[in-house]
Image 1 (cartoon, rainbow, N blue to C red):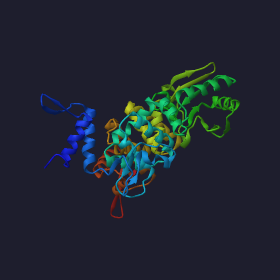
Image 2 (image 1 turned 90 degrees about the vertical axis):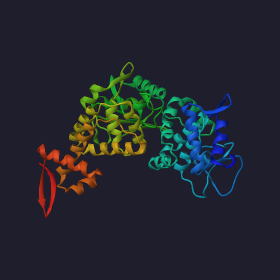
Image 3 (image 1 turned 135 degrees about the vertical axis):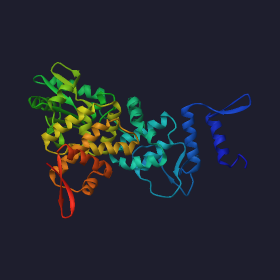
Image 4 (image 1 turned 180 degrees about the vertical axis):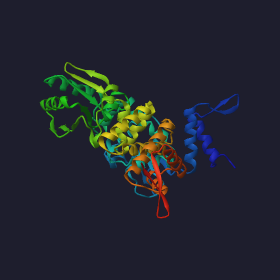
Length: 417
């Protein structure tokens, strides 16, 4: 077979062009460089089963996608090439996004991807995004987008203006300006704690956040709200709004009932101080716990970012139990679901000690058996865990005297003691 027209011929020609193969003393060898090798892997996949391609001229029988479809979603880009998916079909916003990630070759392309993400992230279903990314084998590349945004945020924000996109959301500098305004309008000393995306911005784990979330002790709540009103915010219940900016001020208790406990306050760290205002970062374990309760795709992404930083899982478990007692809800189930989702979505094993995860599962089983007696099949269906795992934990709980097995209508059921 000749090189021209063969898979190897295409790979050989493109590899030379990409600098993957070099010639020394008349011999060819593959360069030992990870970036180039990943480009070769991408090329091999392109030549085999990928349905995406780019063209210098318009063609029929295919659908515009990636950068060529950005204008349909509010990013007025006119690329110098045409980006296509082979089959004629409607292309979803999630496909457009993932396809552009696949096409991206340099920092300029990644900036465009970042602008599209910031503009449209609230409109995308990230479960679909990750499913599509897995199909194209670019989960790792996709996971790098938030870090790219963090590292290049000011440049991306300026570039977005060229495409008539406003990403004027709250960076650390913006947040510090707000804290200064609050400080200048306080009638007395006050302390606030940062939660949500605001917390992650100050840790450098996010470049910006759409809304600002803070929580404070009851004695400071009215002081902070009054200061916000003085600088033009209209406050109703927890939400304080001024133009497109929103600050949620929680009074000792966050949505779904999570409390600012003494343990959380003790682990919080001072990050900003004015004449009257102190701003503290609540620990990442608390942020992980809050975000695991929302079931929003963006919050799952944040949980992944937080978990990679390393967490004190023993403290997180103790705090989850404390919150569970206070709010009288089974917090541990959403925590367990989030851990499972992180493993499935990122194909990465989050480094939570198995012992801690096992304890969480035991406590979840106890909680559900405390509500009503169940047979093994019902427990398995509820938890979506392997039968062997469930039976092993039930046996342990039985030996520890926490549960009992009873026979009802020719079947055994389990209930908490």
